Image (cartoon, rainbow, N blue to C red):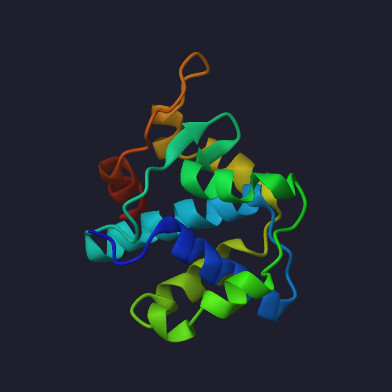
Length: 149
């Protein structure tokens, strides 16, 4: 079982992005979550969060997080006062190094570059079907793919 929810991890990325003055769109946030889950699975053989990651047309998506921020459209998601009031860096000490490494590796790319990158990776390729919705990218496929990274 993951110790965090995907929304928790998303909030960490948004808080970090705020400190870096680096805007993050929903599309980019989805890819950061995918990479964080994949690298966590490969390193620890358990999930970072329990939420499903699905293969959508524009790459991997955590539906719960997508719906939370879809009001932002393709624009940046702001780390607002409500999020800040509920956020505590200490809650993430167990995964902080991993999340910083994921940020430093993938955040320099824009959202569309990350989207294109995921389209070339086995977990999304094997799960995606243009005629079906809600196909999960399995934890096993993520762990197997990221074990080599």
